[in-house]
Figure 1 (cartoon, helix red, strand yellow):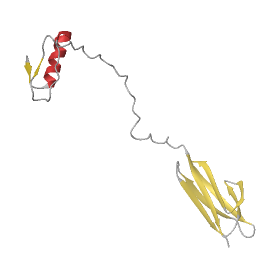
Figure 2 (figure 1 turned 45 degrees about the horizontal axis):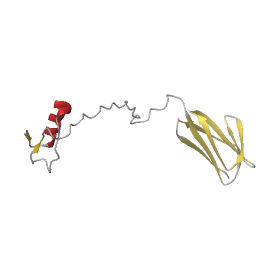
Figure 3 (figure 1 turned 120 degrees about the horizontal axis):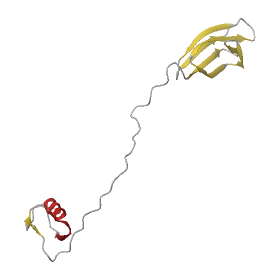
Figure 4 (figure 1 turned 90 degrees about the vertical axis):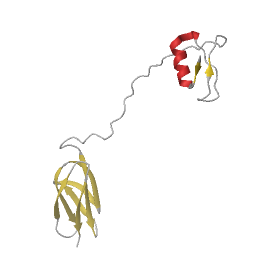
Length: 135
């Protein structure tokens, strides 16, 4: 039997089972032959792959209304005692807190001078800043 493409020979050999054989061919257009003297070709075993779970292409959205953000307060020109919603947070020139999303009252009381207060809205995953210029 003569065939003109290796793929046809392989298909025919697999269709005929163990009795068919292939001879090596120099190229796809050269004729190939099979004969009774060639060793039989066993069909390739079938392999079944387990399904693979792919990660999502985009991250899930943050939960509505929840999550933390960053509150940053800076005293320009010195130190002050910071408080957030009336709770003392210490004395320094800056403050950085992770807080739940909400509106906060941030105060800065310098060693000398009047206390200054700012309202800061914190959104989930974002940073909001309150700046206090000291005299």
